[in-house]
Length: 143
Picture 1 (cartoon, helix red, strand yellow):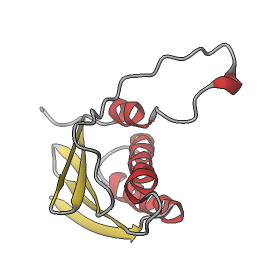
Picture 2 (spheres, rainbow, N blue to C red; picture 1 turned 90 degrees about the horizontal axis):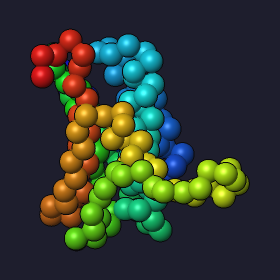
Picture 3 (cartoon, rainbow, N blue to C red; picture 1 turned 180 degrees about the vertical axis):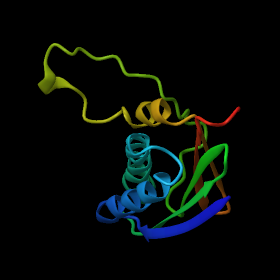
Picture 4 (spheres, helix red, strand yellow; picture 1 turned 135 degrees about the vertical axis):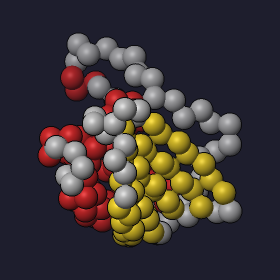
């Protein structure tokens, strides 16, 4: 098992750096093409932290990456605003009319995208710390 701890400023400039660091670790356990997809999910999750948790604040995003022979687990933590209690964090695709590409909504696809790429997503907030855990089962695993 391997464990890596990273942290970066909770702003859009540093999200890309966290994504690059994550991908380098992911490429040690999955093919490069799969690591690239996982990086997209991680960047989307970090962007959500910057946009929603930190909104008008500054803060830190911590990323703990754990690899085993069976799965790749990423814990993203922040101290920004938590997801409001009772808000359902669903990943259902949004209905929209694709006849005009200029009319496509700007947001609303992030959770759906993450859940398409990863196998499990869990969120909780406790003692002022928000945690999002993303898990990807490895193909050579019997899970």
